[in-house]
Length: 501
Image 1 (cartoon, rainbow, N blue to C red):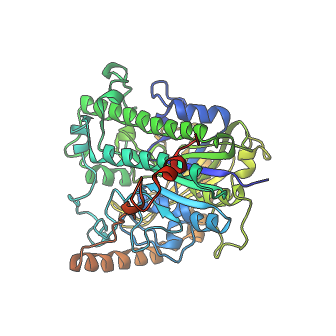
Image 2: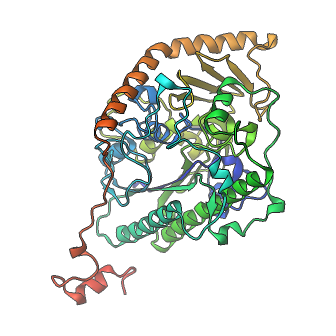
């Protein structure tokens, strides 16, 4: 069997809870819905770090953040760590990236043969946290309540500009690949920034929703855990706060931008139809993490609570079954899954992968409605904490550990809003103790903290001294585009026409 093409479409900060494909009664996501109907929907997929860059590094390498130094959004990603793009190159794929992947460091490809756009965020050390002064708020780049007070509409924003470029470049790439005589399969990643805050949408998407139908968050827990208190202080939720109308505006814009992302997904799916590749392409849709959107009294991400840590994961295409998978999985599993889709590798990965392939579940060989077991492992070593945080989600339970905080244990099936911490429950004392033992066995928290702090200190010195980074400038040779005087006009027209006239 010939290896299929692969189209990976990513949102940023999209929680599955706020999509029609995962059952939200209001949010319009017809393109995601269609993929869920003809493919597999994973109902308990998690990111491995609830913040952009570490999540993406971990996803691309199939390794946990602490294994590759993916501490935070300003951590340099070493060029000698193989990614799924490297492996797919070895498997004979043409690999292309359009959009955000939040690379920091001089390697701005990490295995992709071509990159069509620049990053949307700094590719330097500007956003380095400071655990030496962990209680100090960093005004320059922390999320804050301005995302709520400024929520609403605009005709253009830097995020809209970016996603329009990402979508256009990805569509054009699909046509270019179709016009190319190269018959190797392609792996195209189209990675959008929406619905990431600021919560600002164009009017045509905003107007798909109305104020009176926007659902507001559920009540906060009776008592906030220490990390949520740190988050609320860091984002100024405890000092500035928000009004019900600001909350409604933010959620309305988020829903609107989710529909906007879904529209771009639909445009790419239409292009696959137009180029005759719809039946030969595996389509994967996911996000790097979610957004609390006011649930549990919090916003944005940075925590292992459900709205922050869970992600959508849809897979459809040749060889994919139809159904849902309730078992727990994570973005770590994407790299081994892609290797399986590509038919395996001519060489073994240089280091063991921390994830497992989802291909058996996606293809139905393990049952598309298979086991409700599985696990997801998470690590968080960025802002608004001073010590590493770890998560184990296994079966129905989630355990969260940080050296400075009491342990958290939740029964996600019985308590999906995570209001009841069961870590001190006598009935679950043995389970809680077993999780604590496992955390101590899996991680040397003190050693990891030493590595994090040393990295932060070094990066702050470098940034203070130099500041410049490695912002990516896409390579385009204008002299070879469209029609130029070294070309035969009569040949250029038919060559670039698709389908041929």
